[in-house]
Image (cartoon, rainbow, N blue to C red):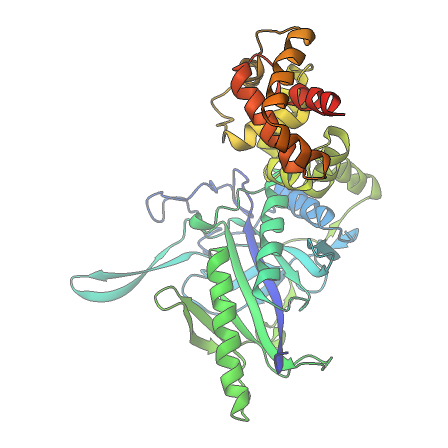
Length: 438
């Protein structure tokens, strides 16, 4: 047993795929666009410009909370989070502090362990710093196209104990927001950014360590794993010297798979939160909340359980088929088209043949399966005659099967299928052999 146990919490930022930004009418589709072309006085923080909240973004944030099993209070508000950084045009970020849209949820891992979700709150994204060389000189440039894009921050309890748990949670979270249709969560485009908080305590201790290290803006599951593993090793070495790791914010460096110090870590008081004076509090009716909940789609875990029960899929196949809602919908539509084809066979075909669901119509799948399993027809009498000859030629194998060696039967099935050359299905051959041997 290791001397130290990791204590890990996560902050995940997910960009919503609304058409416009969070507090203005600028297009939120900024990726790959010419810098500073999707901006206006509001997202540039110019004096006198006032924010107008994006209703759709707020509704989607609430639905994310609902999908994560959160409570969704009927009263909420926006707050100003004050800090100074070049990519923050106003000198503050409109976010949420003490009364977010969703609180107290959870995600259950495959092990059965529940990861507590403290909150899911709404805020605006910042601009993007671009580090480059101009005329041989290192410079930092700012692109404000991303400034003001709707961003949901999902914060967990410090319930993770290893990188494997973190990765599974993140995969499930990404799957949920994609099922909801509120975000693409494409990490290569920065649409889902991951920030683990990592510290260590002596194994057996219950309290939280007196420090924590946050690693900012990671954009891949594998990088999160590497950052956590590096931090566990680094912090262990510091603790073994009788020292305490500094409470700080660090960045992940892909080259070398390590983290580097960026700045001392702020506390909530450092941000001087106060209610956003330009946006009134948000008050919901229970009827509005019920309407939002009624429009939630069937979520991944529920769909997987239904596929196992309704279509008799294995847990493994159901997990693959339901990894994204498009494949799950394609499977179900194909089952409806091929009513006379076993759903298990359809799932196996989609998985094993790696079907491109965007290009292959459901009807084509059914035709392919029928063609592959088509038999020319053989009478039962003729089949039994052929199988009797195989049994007579393999008396030792028959004896092995009678003595309990199940593999012997499969050898006989194989011999029969060679002789039949596709004129009968393997399942029927197997059952007929068992009947003849008895």
